[in-house]
Length: 127
Image (cartoon, rainbow, N blue to C red; front, side, top):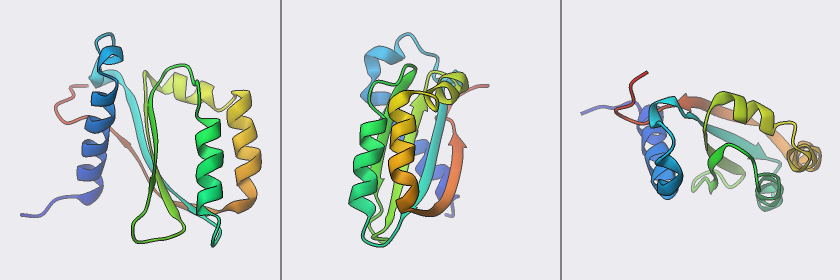
């Protein structure tokens, strides 16, 4: 049996993230959340520093249901970020938060590039 790896990973990650905030989800319709999975590459040897900046910048973001940073097990310079938001507007608004702007300022010099990015929805969600 074949499957689309990105869809499988995306659905699994969103399901995991949504289950970690069960009490918040009682008020949120999973079909309407905005969820992203993206890959970011650090300059060689700078992945841990990048993770620190991402973690610092992601604290206390209104509308954020989950924000997790994952180390790639194969690429020592790559991280994957999974995000679940109440809606797309909350995600866009977060980009203007002071701590997010500061994280972007610190991280920009050590970001080597971006890989795959997907907007995903939980399995069974109805639009």
